[in-house]
Amino acid sequence: MTANRPRQTGPLDEVGLVEVLYYGVQSPRTSRHGSLYAPPTDVYETDELIVVQVEIAGVKQSDFAVSLHDRRLIISGLRVDRGPLSRAYHQMEVPFGDFRTEVELPAAVDESRVDAEYSDGFLRVRLPKQQPRRIDVAE
Image 1 (tube, one colour):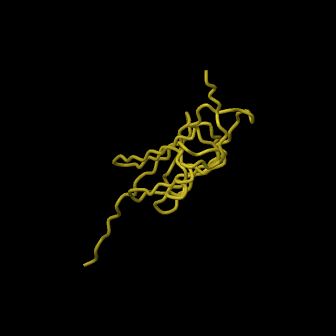
Image 2 (image 1 turned 60 degrees about the vertical axis):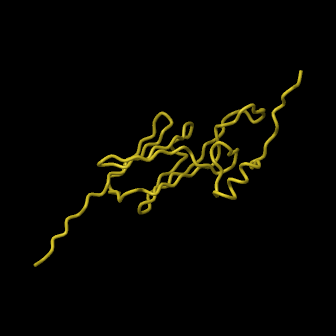
Image 3 (image 1 turned 45 degrees about the vertical axis):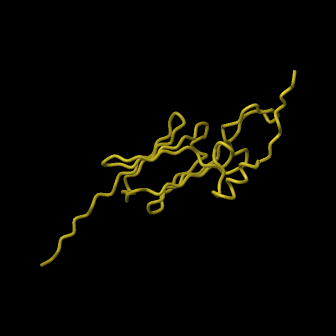
């Protein structure tokens, strides 16, 4: 019988290092404690809205921030690992540490009417599209 011992890993394993060098950030699948990661993010639009949905389960509302700069939505924060300090992983897929996702919005939005809610581990940001402005032409 052969024993299968979990191996100790550092913040950047070989796959993570390649991702950082190539993309500038590790994917959630390979990120480890202390590394910046991008949480799973969906962006969709309706006739009236652009909706950005980010999965950040386990993050306190006080541990993330949402900002809008022109047509770029930025969501950043920290997912704290509240588990025991001494443990041996057999599988590790849930990233912890600093996260950041940036979304280039597909259309201009009405910044005064943007709202967001955080429930069931999902942050949903609703961004009403800016309506075209009619310009009267003088004769």
